[in-house]
Length: 101
Image (tube, rainbow, N blue to C red; front, side, top):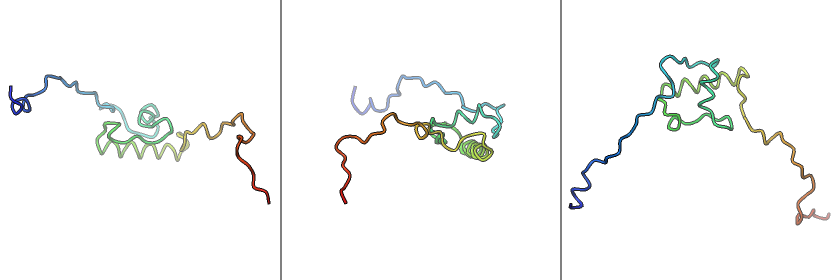
């Protein structure tokens, strides 16, 4: 078969259509924490529309609901647990010197 004919052949792979992340009965609301938490990263950031596979209108509504939940203290603004942990090492690492005055 020529190279030109091979370019126009359709691939034999079948693509399974994914289910939409928001079902028709789900209400996008700041009180629906199970729905909202699916669209947040581990750090508490809002995931992008491409990652979530949402429409533009759904992404806007999710963003507004997340921001309302943050303001009402249902969600934290940051989920950075390392910030509050104390490290076991309190001494300075070797090699760092203080400057003599």
